[in-house]
Image (cartoon, rainbow, N blue to C red):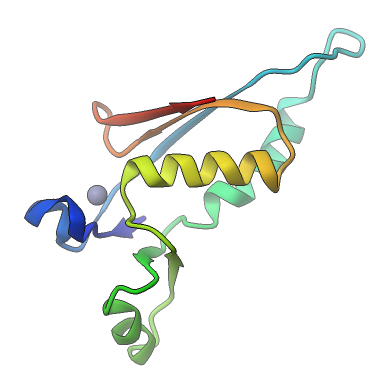
Length: 121
Ligand SMILES: [Zn+2]
């Protein structure tokens, strides 16, 4: 996903992208026949949320680039916050929790192999 974060300095404020890595943890309280929930059923809920941003350029909704990309006919996504890893981790966590109705307890969102954010409740 491409993005820029104008609040995080000159380097992060430039247009650039990452191959984000997302790991989610869940806490289930019931099992049926030794299974809480099939991984494939978790994937059916979480993947559309996470992949919604795949190969898109993500902008804060008031970024001036929104107008330029619209004029250029480019596809993009907007969010109501700066596109920092921290904000993205919390955003995805809450979407999985609220829209997906899954008992997510922790998310790791990495911009690189060595730079990641952990958010947990
Ligand atoms: Zn970045």
